[in-house]
Length: 412
Ligand code: F6P
Image (cartoon, rainbow, N blue to C red):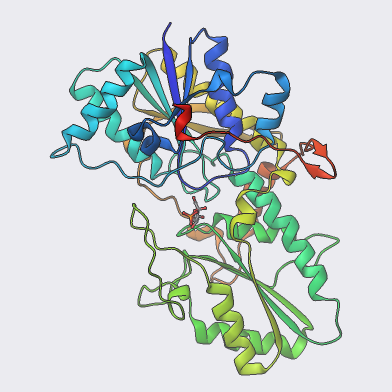
């Protein structure tokens, strides 16, 4: 048996470390010698930033804390490998490092951009007939990966968003004068996470008034008009908007006020300011109190409200990836196939990375209302099983305890 290496890439989640643990523990249980971790993903590998995970995860307590620790324990990157053609030296360098470390399998925990890395390494590996296997472990709060029913990370973010939305709705009703609250939710060009605000509605909660997903063109004037109509009847109005809503000419709403300068390696613009812009428009037109609530990083790192089902599935995806690699497979991403809603049951399967890398899965049109201002019950039923059950943080001094990777370049 040889060594394996694992990295985390892209935006973090509340359960990405459970996938890391799934890879680590399953590889150890199946007889791997050293489990290496790339610090800051493939970029770290290229820079020689590698740690021996067995030296960092030693006890049962370390493992319990790791799965309760949000964000990426190993650090992350948004780094796009160049085209193989014309950049062979980058790939030669990576495969030389893998050979020196005696790596038999490479695991990358990430979303559709990160799977581009698995795809390119698989293609180069096949070209040079390398024995190293490359397997992707799915992760993203955005839930926009193709083929899989859903992605680890989504359920916990959806649980946080739905719970927080309930609290925002209660807060909005506290005064005897009107307040318009606009909640901005992550998810880029897919509205899965924004749709999770619909879960707030129940016998103890009025629910949000409107929900806007990026799958539909956004009309700012119509939105302001609709708020005016609602203000005639309601004291508190709560609206959820995706950070990725765009107007008819293709510009993001957040670009209408702010100049978006920052673009990452995959060409994604930094999206923020949608709620601020829309709340400003409503305040300007009607002179009412408004709140712009950007859930931002809070929604992807809320480990104090992890969904137990999400933690379990994240771990299992890591384990399934190791199993696939140790069976000699390569160029795959682990997927989740829902075989039953009630009782909820999902099984881990495998898909060709070429069908997943760089592909964005959007909310189907039939799950959005005709006028594009809310979501249908099918979407609520789809999300509901994914937020179920809890896992208690380990509280120390009144706060959840986390683990940190103490790493400096001198550790090399
Ligand atoms: O990884 C997905 C995501 O959380 C998106 O929902 C969001 O738009 C993006 O990451 C933000 O990325 P960054 O942390 O690089 O600003």
